[in-house]
Length: 88
Image (cartoon, rainbow, N blue to C red):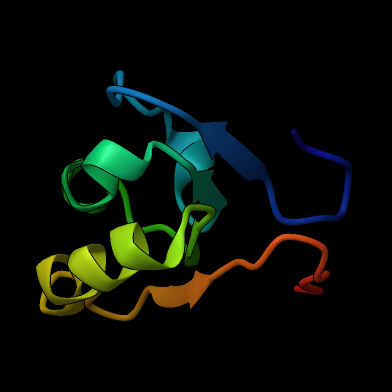
């Protein structure tokens, strides 16, 4: 999703396909509980995202944090919780 004057938001579930240059600086939200760490690493390897937002259960997020921690390199990281808003 992209609105003029706003940061692009990329909603992902499943494998990461090639990300175009508009994904640089984007907010990437992904929710595949079984593969949060793998998806996050693939996104970080492809583009410099502004923020990674994990939308999954607590156990999946807890497993993804150590996998993603060292690869963030300036990208932000947040775990989303159902029913709560995040303003960027």
